[in-house]
Structures are given as C-alpha cells and as structure tokens.
Image 1 (tube, rainbow, N blue to C red):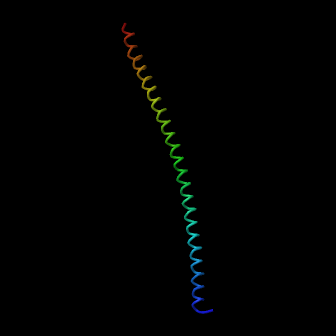
Image 2 (image 1 turned 30 degrees about the vertical axis):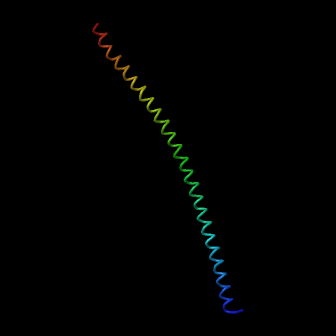
Length: 88
C-alpha cells in the first residue's frame, strides 16, 4: 500500500469520525431544543392558567367590592334616619 493510499485511508477515517461527532452534537442540540420547546409550552400553559385565575379573582373582587359599597351605603342611610326618628 502506498503512502498516498494510507494517507487517503486515514483522511477518510478522520472524516467519518468527524461526521459521527457532528451528528451526535446535532442530535444532542435537537434533543435539548425539543426539551426547551416542551418547557416553554408547559410555561405557556401555566401562564394561561394563572391569567384565567387572575381574571376570575378580579371579577370576584369587583363583585365583593360593589356589594360592600352597597352595604356601607345602606348602613349610612339607616344611621342617618335614626337621629331623625329620635327627634320626631
């Protein structure tokens, strides 16, 4: 076997090893990207659920606030009427 053939064989083997390493690196990055995508999707789902909870709690808070305002207004009316009844 000539030196040229030996060099060609070594070059071919080195290129095959390089391709194998490159494919492994690409596969690893692809798996990481898939894992990252899954994590992002999970976080988006959690964010959506939290937004729904926030919206529900905001509506509930507004309802309670309106009812409390109404109750306070009624109490004010009752308290304002009592001195007028005592004077009459």
